[in-house]
Image (cartoon, rainbow, N blue to C red; front, side, top):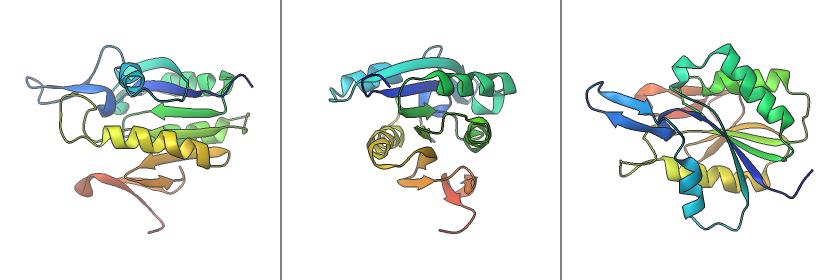
Length: 171
């Protein structure tokens, strides 16, 4: 392993979107704003950023999932945070979990229900900070950090009427 960094793998989703009034929906930015945001925080941590795609997660393809997986597998870093749209985040997390060979990593998926920039309040800053913090505490494995809670890919479900994630095990 090289010097400890957190590797952000960026895929779009609401966290990395803007509101398009004509379409009346959030639309992913052309390029991620997360690197600029993270750098503005002046954290002591070092980061690496890999932009895979900038898509609404409902448009993530098997090919995109494979590229995310390959980036995780090839990353020399032990701590990885994947920003992802919330609709299919559990699907991609389960795909990575089912295929991952190098299990010597802490892999965290996170996203938001409200874009990082342009809305106040937004859950995005909290989810990013929570994920960075949890990357130091969690043991090797794949997790989803949303709404102040850590979930496994096997248990998580998006509860749209509540605007958050929860466990199918009612924990």
